[in-house]
Image (tube, rainbow, N blue to C red; front, side, top):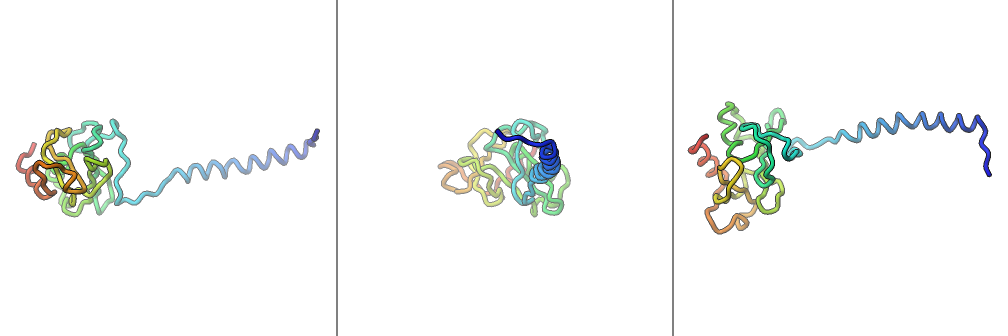
Length: 159
């Protein structure tokens, strides 16, 4: 059986006390993950609210993340129609320069909204009916349109 002296116990206690601030600091700074502002923001499903209509974003296949290229601020939406109308309603002139991410209707991955293909036959959270796909073939056999046409139709419809 090993015997420890009081001095050895104090040294061990002192070394633990010195390590605690280092451990706490590493946990604190390690939790501050630096993300690339150009990448989509983390969605908190059923808690994040659509910037335009203020409804909870819950339907994962229709979520949208808009990034202001100047301020790097992210704006979240529940439907591509809300995102397009929001630019005009709020008077934002940076819509053409914005980075717009949408969820792919097949894989659920974030894709570039401006290069996506859209089917027009689904029921979406705000009723605009556009589902994004990375590949044209994934959009189905019905009507398939590009982002410019989605924008034109949303602006014509309004709401």
